[in-house]
Image (cartoon, rainbow, N blue to C red; front, side, top):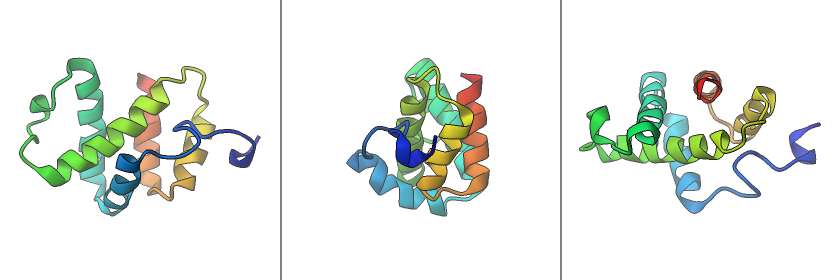
Length: 109
């Protein structure tokens, strides 16, 4: 089954917030992408961005918001196969390193 034969994990289309944040996510370095993934997991576990120590950085907040939206969409589907998740993220033209880290984080949830 290819991405064209099914609905992506994020739904029929991306919400406006995620669409705007994807450009920033694509340009972010791997270290910031990893921190955003960790922050998204932390936010879902504690409902607080303050634990990440990054609440003052609006650029990082946008990155976290984008990753958090994608992460929430992925974890709400318990039967989402990693291969489909990777395929959907590739369709968004995200960096391979981010896709690997994001898929690993979703799998650990």
